[in-house]
Image 1: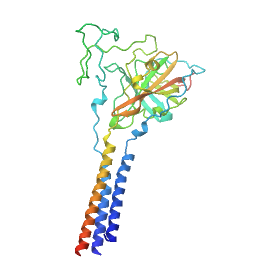
Image 2 (image 1 turned 180 degrees about the vertical axis):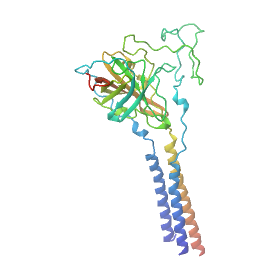
Image 3 (image 1 turned 90 degrees about the vertical axis):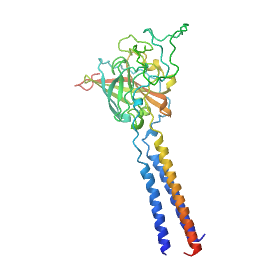
Amino acid sequence: MTPRSGRVLATVVLAAVLAGCGGQGSEAGGGRASGGNGPARHATTAPPQPSAEPVRPLARSEPVGLRIPAIGVDTPVMRLGLASDGTVEVPPVADDDLAGWYRHSPAPGQVGPSVVLGHVTVGSHGDGVFRRLARLHRGDRVETRLANGTAAEFAVIEVRTVAKAEFPTDDVYGDVDRPELRLITCGGPRSGDEYRDNVIVFAELTATTSARSPAVS
Amino acid sequence: MRRTILSAVALACTAVLAGTAPAFATDPTPVPSDPAATTPSPGTEPSEAPGTGTGPSEVPTPSVSAPAPAAEPSEVPTPSVSAPAPAYEVSADGQVSVVPEGAADTGVGAAQSSGSDTGLIGAGAGAGLLAGGAVLFVVRRRRAATGA
């Protein structure tokens, strides 16, 4: 092998290696950020504690909007019911993913657990509206806008990641004696299209706002 | 001298081609959304036998002719007339009136093939470049040997 041939061969091999690395790099950076959706493995924050001053509940009015500043959520809210198999319906899988309120639960601000669901991912459409739900912490604000113009503001009291097989039905849907909110999405490791866990955020009512006046209670 | 220039040009062309291949590969064919995923699967688990609205029975009936739940999920939604009975109802005002069964299916995984395809194409481009370099090397050696 002549020195010149050796140099040429070394150059070609180097170029090939660089090309291979470029392909892998584009793979790592070209995803739709679903890898960032993995819920934090922190199990929960502290157990729920009743607030010192209970806020006066609101009259029933369907939620039309949901805002969670800490994780950049600002979405319309649709109505959800029961699926044919008895499970709760979920919002449609679409580009413009949005949250949904389970209509057999109290409206936000009413006494009882108001349940709102959203996707963590929506298949080929990418991230869901609740992709960062697991990043919420105790005290983070959740604002709901109601159809009658009022708004109910909640504070996160617990974030729980549980296996779907051990879904805490009573904790989520069971009776409570004050206005509370549940935000539900999927989380945990994924096998195929299925997530193993549910991420559930428990929140309590901290303030209400009428359509005109900013702080009724 | 001319051979050296030609070799350099060939090498540059090969490197450029290898570099552009992954760029083409990052434009994946749009994957159509799975319409089946938009609707909750009616048969993810054996459905309860249509009851009379009294809720699910824990004790199986001893009758041999009792309709057994489907052993495997059916692809075609069964035109069930009676809605499945909820697990239980809460009668208190303002609470949850109908409690859903099981967990919420609020995550549809993204297509898994995109990343691996990109990696495969990148590796293929690298292999092609290696092959080109090897051919170039052999040709040059033969030319050097023959003095052509």
